Length: 174
Image (cartoon, rainbow, N blue to C red; front, side, top):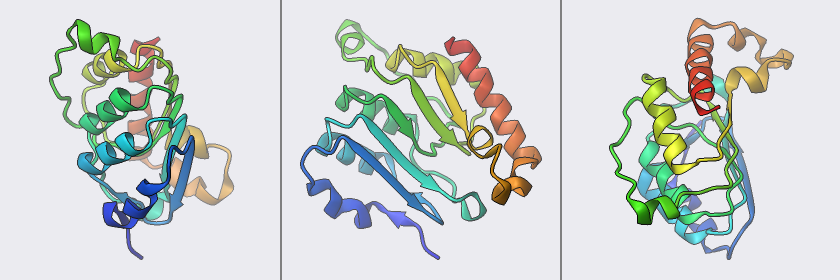
């Protein structure tokens, strides 16, 4: 069992202008912000990007909100995003008039799966600044609620706590 890192995805970056990218791996994706920046620059026409991992072998994400910001800056057609992101710290960005015009205005759903989050209020402010139309946050709990094979994962206290924190982010966005 191994994770997929940026080197494994590198050949895919040569595909010209994909619109929908959805990848699933049992262990997960060990990507960083630099890899997300490469993806965003290589695939500016993305409408949806999903990088999904099974929860039993879930690895701690290295992609941060800075990587999400790169997607906002470069992928202006992005409507749906699904990836695990480390949201335990929120970068300070100043959105001047030029950057406000560059805010991504199409993303309305962000599937964060089991992304760690510590300060829902600050995360919501950050996400609202770069994705002003974002209204829906999906979590692992939302996605797996009715699937029997992951039932034992649903009731875990950490899964429920992350779900609750992300729903607090969603409430602020609304």
